[in-house]
Image (cartoon, rainbow, N blue to C red; front, side, top):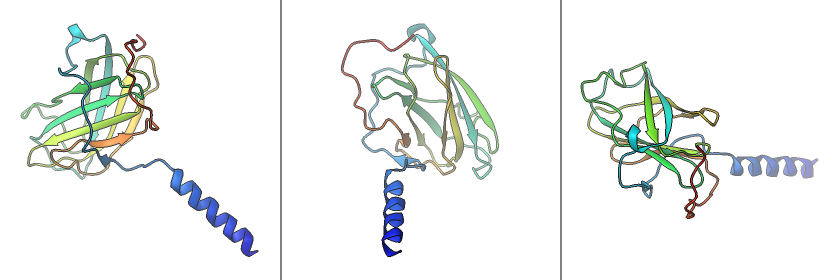
Length: 170
C-alpha cells in the first residue's frame, strides 16, 4: 500500500513539474525582432485581429501607453509600439477593444507580451489573437501589468528562432 501511495505521489509531482505556466511572467530578456513597428499595412503582408478584454477589476480607464508583441516558435514576430491613444477611451474597465494589426506572416502564435508605461495601472482579463491561417489563441492575464517590463506568456516549448531566410506562410 505504501508503494502505491509513493507511486501516486511521484506521478502527481511529475505532472505538476511538466505543466504549462498559466500565469503571465515578466520577461526582462525579451527582445523585439525588428527595427520598425509592424502596423503599417503597406509594408506588411498579413493582418491580425487582436481582441483585448479589460478586467472589471481594472481602474476605470488608463492613460498608460500599452504595447504588444506576439509571434511564433520560428522567430516571426508582430510588434505594435502603442495600441491606444491617451484620450481614445480604449482599455476602460469591463470593456473589449479590437484592433486590426498588420505585420509579417507568422505560424501559430505561441507567445504574447504586453508592455505598459505610465502611472494609472491596467489589468487585462484576456488577449485573443486571430489570424487567417491558424486557430485563435487566447492568453488569460487577470492581473495587473507591471510598469516598464514586457509581461506575458511564452508557450513556444523552447524552440529557437529561425535563422534561415525562408518566409512564413502567406
